[in-house]
Image 1 (cartoon, rainbow, N blue to C red):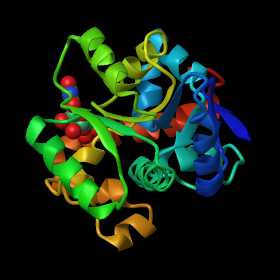
Image 2: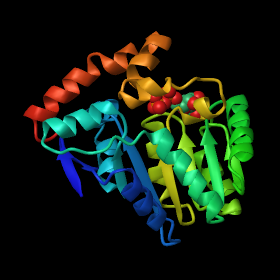
Image 3: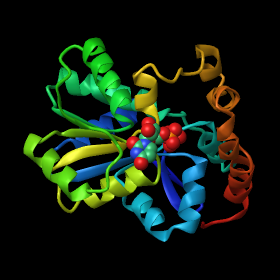
Length: 238
Ligand code: UDP
């Protein structure tokens, strides 16, 4: 199940079905890529053909955030919003239960270390076999290091489109694994950034809370969101 928005397919399975699909991608056959897409990424894709192609080739593209959910609704499709951070957290829970080795890449060193500590404490059985901060340019060396540890689930938190490109390029060199870009999730898991209160989350207003608490994010909402919604109604491709 999916819907094309501005020439890019967005999968519209709902949370539980998406989790099942993700689990099936940890099959040892290839490096699989999950993208949690938001309006800003559509904007980037409209200017960056390589990035658009990465999204087109992804194994699963899930609607992260209220903007994409709204655009889908305006285009006649009702679907569940799947916050990337909740989805990734669920994948970690599943990995722990199923004994799947995990790697986590991204964020500043102290943020990463704290997040890894917190996750290991919170999720019993979680096996993090490799982690590295997200500030490097020697991608090939990182791929080699990852390969020596053979993780089967790899979370990459380096912001978009950097994380999606890192994952895409990994397809050529990495042992089979499921990889997903998780943006600022490590900042939250480390405790350094607070998530919006539950009420904001339930109402789909997490973006409002984040914009108030981090005003520098205003450009992510305006004009990106209204422009994206209008384009999603009026244009067939990016
Ligand atoms: N980051 C990184 N390497 C970089 C740039 C950013 O690891 O070269 C990290 C940054 O520390 C933060 C995350 O990527 O933890 C992305 O944060 P952002 O809030 O931009 O993500 P998004 O809004 O895309 O979820």
